[in-house]
Image (tube, one colour):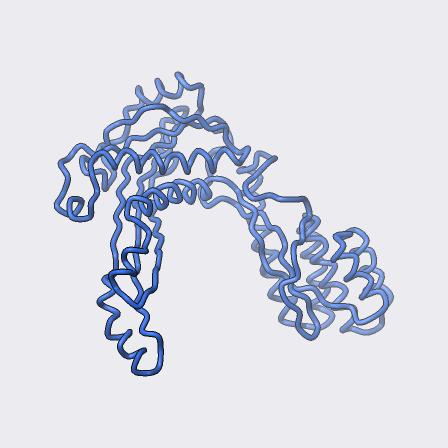
Length: 345
């Protein structure tokens, strides 16, 4: 199954750092989605129901937002959602053309739910199992007055610095999502999703710093798209790069196992480390070999075996590193049931 951010099976990327006895590595780990959607839901349609109907507020007037912009920004949010969801095979995604007025006139809070007759009609028309509906969407852009940092700039000059001032622009978005499942006539998800992004620009002149800062319209477009994309990442399982340690081998079989791992021959590395564990008479060597074997099994996707070997490592030497790694593996094992549901495996 294709899922977000998957690059290659059993991948181990780059050396992060080395210390006296260990080598830091990045390993690719699948984590369950924060939002679990019924596995029977395989086809889903995206609906924009967030267009405000109330008159512009004083706040929106002062910030430069225009009524016509509300639709553009919410559509950009949905574009981010659809493009991100389409990178995963978890759902087949359909974008419902057109927009609907928000149930809350200002589009800043949840209002009444869609009638189930309408939900049924939309699902039937697009041959989908459920709807993800953007119920409201609100954005804002603010600039921290660089004059507020003028005192700091003066202090910097007095202390021999360059007298730089910093303009900071922050775009925020607040989105309300519901997932409608007509088969059970239930709202399987309803919550607010917030997202914020900040840009900075430095200059010796406050006016110049603001002039070089990202323009409000562009900032709002970017934060709108990323809001949709970030929300979608909570709906599908993702691969992440996570840090792990591997014990180095100074010589002999341990060194050979390390080289095999770096060459991504994990089956060979596991075999080598297992032989070291079984033949060595030194507890510390056996513990290191068992620890590395656990890492090998994790990379290969056998978490039960990984847990078994890290337990051996802790029993042999009692190191905190093994105990901490055991906790990580236990957490991953607890996630497996959710992942089975979310991936349909």
